[in-house]
Length: 320
Image (cartoon, rainbow, N blue to C red):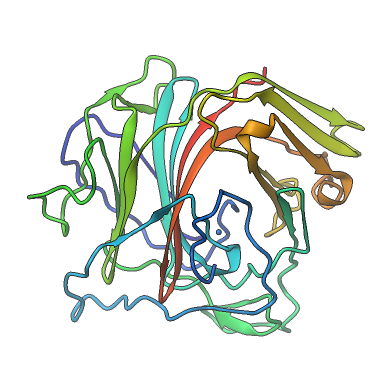
């Protein structure tokens, strides 16, 4: 699995460590160059582009110049190497991050792309067997399994990154934090405007300080046909005063597993998201569709030689 960490803390200057794991499949939702137009779902591109892997050797990697993510940009999934998400649900906030030295070989271009949604579908194993440390990729050949760069760490701050005077090699910065009374293992960051930073040997990417999206008012979801045989999913909400994107991610049923999922991102001002049947049927196997809800989300992304790093500020809508 690619490294995915959930950070919870209550002090400033908390150091965090990340356990590196050989291979994995991220939650989705990952261009040649970031697009500064309005947030959209990943753009299809038939070309394969694995980038130049990050140098993960610790003996010859010195400080690198921070790269600033572009607000409103997204990563194509086939190019994404990193994802940092600041997530709020029922008043509690957590930050999670993942980073690979190169794009994951299981993710290419979407099979279907329409209406702000994309279906990614892949069944690994068609290469006739791969050596240790390799995976059968969408290219149809064995490719190196993902590895996490040394000293991977993530930071969130109520100040603009990078924070002056902090030691980038050892410290994770955080604004004032307090434990949420609603979810025991969550962390609520007091500041509404927050910046993020993803660091590793040979990599330093900072995200701008942005306000968290507002709660969506009046959210509702209808699954036509039911969970076993869905024909469509329609989500509606009241357009917010400051609209960003409304997003969702639906994995294939957990009994099937594998890198098959549908991801959507539409303009929050539209008030509606519709996911059609052809993007739902491949997911609704075994015990049915595992729809998790919708989120009001802001995006930023930075393109690097090795791939693309995406940041998200996301607030889960209460549709119950």
